[in-house]
Amino acid sequence: MTDAHAAHHAAHDEHDIDDFFTERFWDERYGSKERIWSGNPNPHVVTTAADLVPGTALDVGCGEGADAVWLAARGWQVTGVDVSGVALGRAAAHAAEAGEQTAARATWLRADILTWDPAPARFDLVSAQFMQLPDPARTDLHRRLAAAVRPGGTLLIVGHHFSDLETTIGRPHLPALMFTAEQAAAALDPADWEIHTATPGREATDAEGRPVTVHDAVLRAVRLR
Image 1 (cartoon, rainbow, N blue to C red):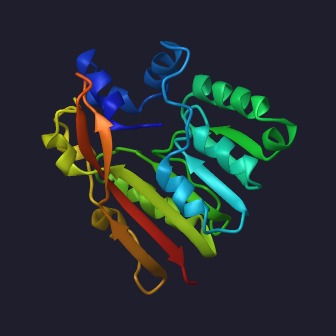
Image 2: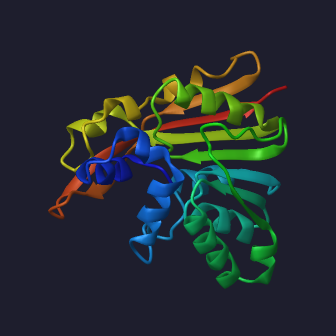
């Protein structure tokens, strides 16, 4: 799962920013610890899926698989995509731990999301959580993901908002990787989509353990045709 925390890791280790998007970087990142993320599904995925009938789902930048496994356990046929084979191996193991039926509903695919193009109009839900890319790569990705949503399906894009640069949570000052929900929505034709954008706040803790409020850029859109 690509996010600005990993960008901070890259900057701290004096990686070039382009390294941040490579298979090698992410394999090393995931291989550095037994678990990188919490293992809990992202809250906007949970909220969105609660209103949907399970169908086919695409989880882009699935990382260790928390979102994909959570969806599969609730009846979704999920494809989890990530550039890191290490992450995908861990995701498959977590799916197996969740049970045979859950594991059978999850498919794992290693691909470079900077170039990978999913099949058009294939999925009922396409989710990209904290895929922090610079433009034009970000807009190009969002357009490809939107094309993968079938009519009646939902596109969910969540990212770190620019305002988080002003918090003390320890994110690097890399504004090119931040975006607003409205910027994500610019990849969509309003004639073809019912578009909802929001910038909700949520509680987090900074490096010193102090409470802070961070903000997510949330695009939820339903394809009309």
